[in-house]
Amino acid sequence: MAADSGATHDRAMTSGSVLEPLSQDLCETLLSSGTTGRLAVVVDGEPHIVPVNYVADGTTIVFRTAPGTVLTETSLRRVAFEVDGIDERHRSGWSVTVHGYGRDISETIDPESQRLRDLHVDCWAPEGRDRWFKVVADTVTGRYLGPPRRREHAQ
Image (cartoon, rainbow, N blue to C red; front, top):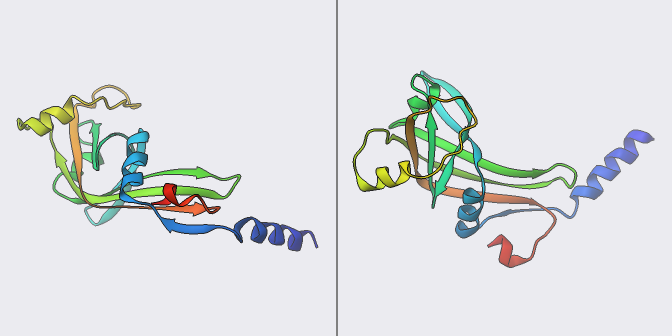
């Protein structure tokens, strides 16, 4: 009996939920509001997902890492970057995913790379994170799961 009431409670909490796409504008707003995300890259046939501190410049993601880390393998490779916000108590949340290519901008002299290196990336990892990378977005998608929201926030 207790198991049934728990299952009924779970269904009741999710029965009014929606799963809906987020607008491009809202995806960019959510990207710019965060400082920690996850970068996915395949190296030597093995997938890696690594948490990174970042700053968003529109849909371009900028992060720093140390030489020799798996993150240095992102240059010129297809990558995915993801940020999210989860509310476990209310069984709701959102996620934004950027698919694109990584670029090492540590020593590039073009004005955009110089400007991106001037952005503040608040690294939690120890010092020595002097390799700068950007993720150039091909696509940016997002979705929301939870109770229905007012339409202007979902678009």
